[in-house]
Length: 156
Length: 256
Image (tube, rainbow over all chains, first blue to last red):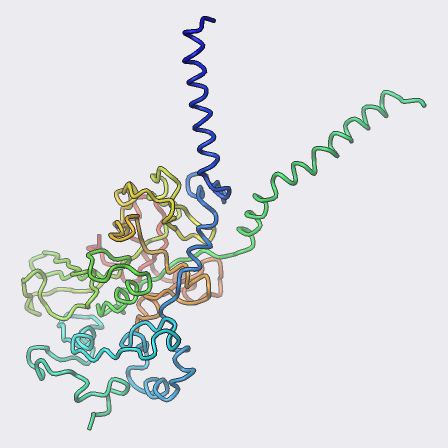
């Protein structure tokens, strides 16, 4: 073959080689089909592990019990027994190691999420013990009168 | 030393096999390991939403955003709660302000107030990723950044995603969004970091009404699996053939 044919041919072959070399260096070893299907299981295998290591923030009531047994016991006896501690106190994360005190959300808007009256027929919402926001002690915090750990009790 | 034709062929075949077999066994070891891990875990995660129990407090949305580090005030969320109000004139009014993050506390839908006597029915529908068996979002990914794990959850590789947005378009349920800070596609993964540690997803844990529950379909003794298999459940957009794995109790035909 003539040189003017061979030269671009070598360049083309070299470029293809470079692409393969680049692919070898850039694509991680664990990238491939991990499962039955090329369509759905083609991925970097270590990413599963990375997602499993994502930090947990909501630790749940059982972890609160370790130190705050009295509070957990009191709310467990109340109509609020199904409300998680962290719904009002925020995610505990590594508390008390990093954050010593968790906040208390005492805002009226938090209580109204469940206890604002919505007159929807045949729903659990209409059966909630509820107030009309505009008619009941407007702009006052609910916790001024109602104990959130046991709403049957009044606050002195 | 004599060597019959038969003995020679035997040795030749045996020798070839002996030299090839260990090599091939070595070459397929990593795949075998992966396969063993897949066969060993008998888990298929699914979800049950009881729309009759949901009262629209939105605590699940708040918990999800905090748990999964989704920008709190950005109009994106991994799970959201929709409110449907059907009025007597046959109109269906739907809203989900900020995904229901702050709960539903008044009767107004887009500044329109509905008198109780005009409402025929109203209900709340929590939505999240359906972790489909045939995920359309995974098919369209051009770089292999999203995939289905052996326990049925569809994950996104944040390192590998190029943010092209094909998957966001492909999902018939609209659960995928563009993460405004990380610049990658994002969606609910049933709190994969929690369920693989034996915890409940953040939305399930924060729900005081038991409206959201996680199931392992491979475990016949799982109480939630029993509900899914024995009670009348429905899925969203069955006609797309994606085989969604979020099951709904009390799903209304108006829910899209």
